[in-house]
Length: 179
Ligand code: S3P
Image 1 (tube, rainbow, N blue to C red):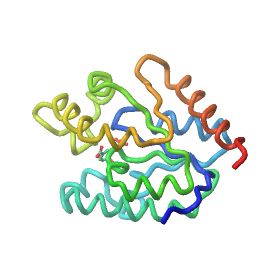
Image 2 (spheres, rainbow, N blue to C red):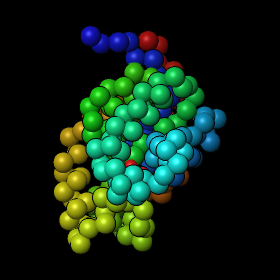
Image 3 (cartoon, rainbow, N blue to C red):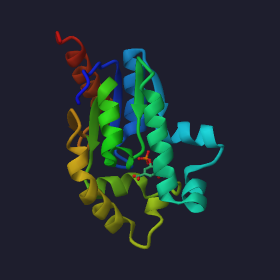
Image 4 (tube, helix red, strand yellow):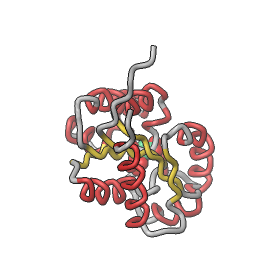
């Protein structure tokens, strides 16, 4: 059964370090939308950090929290939603987002991602002896899912401000299209 899509929000998916939060904030500002980040929503509702949740409850419990947050986001409008890098890997989450949001995937190569995240320590999945190899492995596992986004934007060679402008352009052209 397929429900009619009603695009009133914009969701950013993509790997850790692809620029979702930075681009999302710029896009929200430009559109006059609210900005939310699924990791922050989870941290606020549980009162715990993502690292704590992974360490104490495990990744599966974290994924359940992500799915719950995605369900709650369906009630929103005029919102830019930045998602955790693994959220869209669960098909149910991606399908739910697509009901009310244009889904844009930000893309970058493993090397570029590593360059961006190497000095950060808050991502449990990258606490690995060989983080670059881990990035390559996870990216390969998720690539086919990321490509199910409505729009794929390469963030590799251009400043995030330009990426944000491109995302706004895509969103406005979809919104102004007669249904
Ligand atoms: C994850 C990405 C993180 C966060 C968690 C797991 C992933 O979010 O949700 O550490 O599975 O790729 P960011 O993409 O915002 O870093």
